[in-house]
Image (tube, rainbow, N blue to C red; front, side, top):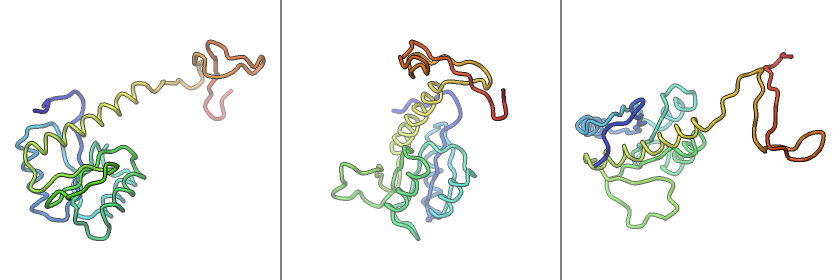
Amino acid sequence: MAQKTHKGRPLQFLLVEPNEPDSRWFDIVLDESHLPATTVHSSTCIRALEAWRECRLPAIDAVVVSERLPMLTIEEFVNAARTLDSDVPIVVLGDQLPLFQPLTSDYERFTKPLSEHDIERLWCIARQRFLRTRQRVALTPRVNWGSQVRMPGLAASRSSGTIPHSLSVDIHAEGGE
């Protein structure tokens, strides 16, 4: 069973589902799971991709997309989504699992109708993405513009050509000193 709490904001799912009853079913099962998550809905993949590209969507932790899309194939949608976010988990919803799915598939497949177990699996996938993203942000050095920053052993000294144990760098905002 999935851990049903986590610190921070609720997880965000982008649901691209042209079939309104399937979209409602997703919301019902997610609501009954009591998992901290919200859903942004789009009935077409083109509208979803445009809103995502234009940053009109909140941070997306996982994309859930119907196998049957008007206008684009699943492969075209996945390729377009990967240009917007290369490691967002993508789950394709279909009526049945294919007999053969390549090992290098760039997405997971679930069957309709979704169960609470499927929602918990999806939530765990999205939570892993959320934690990886949070860890990357925590590891990103914070820089105060106009101050000195020490970066141990990253670059050679300009004058001697040797690699120092730390490098002192002055960082100034544009038009600064």
